[in-house]
Length: 121
Image (cartoon, rainbow, N blue to C red; front, side):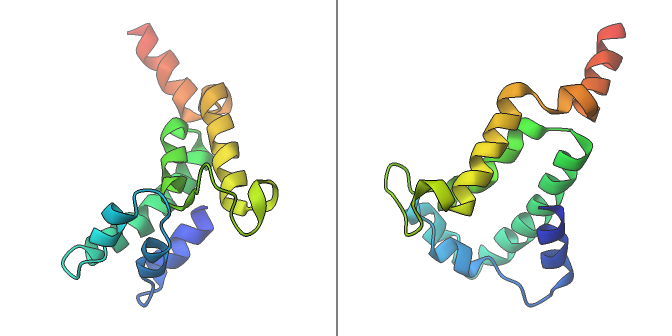
């Protein structure tokens, strides 16, 4: 995810337009994001959001927020072209949800370190 984000940051031609056009959850909201005055902001947020999401998973900080990235493309409760079992977005969302539930950052990440640091004070 870090790689996917940083390549978007470094590519000035990249846009979230195709991603937003394919949104299945809250399509009206994501169509509004396609407005010319809003899309550049969405591009910035998407590029850096994905980069920071990857960094958060690598560092183990704010892991529980990472699952929010996949909400626009999930088609619950409908089965997509590839079905639930092999669709990569479903798999990534489930993995991120799993990380959130178990509190993955608490064990080897900065979330656990910060919790211990602030507990002492």
